[in-house]
Length: 190
Image: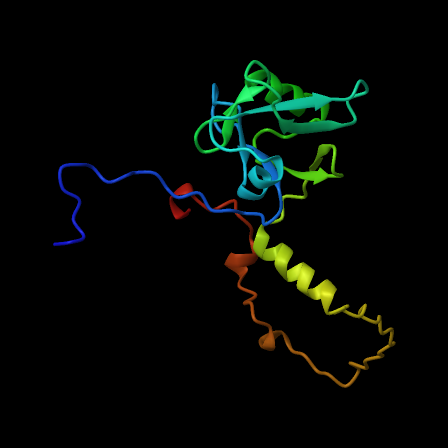
């Protein structure tokens, strides 16, 4: 009886699983008309940007739109406020990023945050889940390189002159009804 929840309804939310071990901002897929334009900051991104729930973040764009940067907002009147779970929903920023990068918004778009110390820029990530990345990294560390398969070209001449085949050995019957065609067929047979 100790595992029962009394005088309340259990939480219905699913626990969010981290897909990446490095800093990532995810632009959530738009799966239905009017869906919120949501950004999710993973734990590594929260640590890198030194942000917590309900603080503010700012996005910066270069004049030629080749660089997108993110930072913790410098004051209470700038940037976009995060939720308690470090997400934001901002239609204007979401659609601007999707437009300049020509993103497919029907799928999640993950951006790795690349930090050079003073600037945290966003780099579109190849959407590979953590499990595959870990495997790839382990292979790279072990220098496990699969050799290219060698093409073997070999001419094979087969002589079938001694094979005798009779029509009785064929897997189909040469029935006159069968070879007549479909003119006598009816739709009821189908």
